[in-house]
Image (cartoon, rainbow, N blue to C red; front, side, top):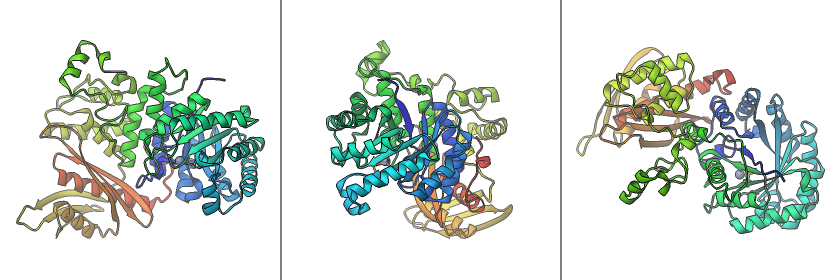
Length: 514
Ligand code: KIV
Ligand code: ZN
C-alpha cells in the first residue's frame, strides 16, 4: 500500500459552516489559489445546492484551479448532484462528493429511511454521479456511530457502483483514537472491494480528538484525510490541516507517510483564512497560534539559546513564519516593503502594491516601527477593498463615566459630504448608530471582535465586523491605534462590502483581486 496521503481540504465547505464564516465567490477564489499553492490534493469548494451564490462560487474556483481536484458536495439526491456537476464541470480535475447517513439514529429520525432504502439510495446516487465523472466520493455520514457491518455493506455497494473514494466521517466528534483506528481496520478488512477505492476519514473536534483520530486512522490504513485550515468548521471544527501535516512531517520516525504539502505555506494560508473569515486563531493553537513558538519561562529561553532543539521540535520557518529578518519603519522603501510582503507569503500585483505602499507610509509615519502584524492588517484591508460607497472622513467621540456616549461623524456618501451625531450605550454603539443613521443601513451586526495586533502602548487595534442584510453577509475590517476609530473603519468597510454584494450578489471570478 502506498504511503502517500491525499490531503482533501474542506475549509471552503465544512470550514465555511463555522458560525458567521460564510464566504463569497471572490473570497473563496482567493483562498483556493492559496490552497493550491499550499499543495493540497483536493479542494472542496462548497455545497452548490445550498444557494445560487455558493454554486457560482464553486464554479469560479473550478474554472481557476488547475493542479488540485475541485470537489463539490451533494446529498444523495439527483437534484443536488446535478447542481454539484453544474458547478464543477469546467474544473481540470472535478470530483463529486455525495453523502448519506448510515447510523441508526440518523436513518430513523432524520432520514426516516430503512437500511435497505439507504443502501439503494447510495447506489443510485453514486451511479448518477458517475454518469458525469469518474471521480466520485461517497461519505457515510455519522459513520463512526453506525453499525459496522452495515457500514461495510454500504461502502461495498458504493464502490461497486463506482465510488473511487469512500469516506468515514466522525460527524459528531464522538470517536476515541484507538476505537476509530479499530473501526478503520474493520472496514478495510470487511469491505471486499476496498482495494478499488481510497479509504478516507473526516473527523470533527467536539472532544478535541480530531487530529488524534485522523492520525490513528492513517496508522490503520486510511490514505485520505479531510481537513481544514486552522481547524475551522461545524461546531468545534474539523481536523486541522496544519496539525496533521506537521505531525506527519515532524514524526516521520514513527509515521511513515508523505504529503504534497509545502509546509512553508502553512502560516500564510492560516493568516489568510483568519483574515477572510474573521475567525481569530487562538494564541495557543498548535502550529499557527501566536504563542506556538514563543518561549516564556526563563529556563526554556536559556535552553533555546543554548540549543533550539531543547524545547523546539520544529522551527517557525518550517511553517512559513518569518524570522523577522527585515524590520520596516517610516524610512523603508518600496523595494524593502515588497520583500517583506513576499517574506510573509503575499505576492501582490503592482497596482495593489502601490496602494498598499502609500498606506504603509501613512501608518509608518505615526509609529516607531511596523511589525509583521501591522503589515498583515494592511494586506487584509487591501484584499477586502471594494469601490467605496461610504468613506469615513471624521470621527469625534465623547464618553466617560458621566457623559452620555455621543459620536459626531462626517462621511462621504457616494462622494457627497454628510455630517451627523448620535448616542449609544457606549462610544462604539454611538458611532455605529450614527453611521447606520447616515447610511440608512438596515443591516444587523452579527459579529464584532477586537484584537490587539501588536504589543506595547502604541499597539494597533484590529476590529472585525460581520454585517448581514437580507441573507447577504459581509466582512469588514479596520485597524487603528485608536480602537473606536478602528471600529468605525471596520463598520464602514463592512457596509461598503455589503453594498458591493447587493450590486453583485453572485460575485464572479473577475471581482477577485487575485
Ligand atoms: O461531518 C460530516 O459528516 C460531513 C460529511 C458531509 C462528509 O461533513
Ligand atoms: Zn463534517
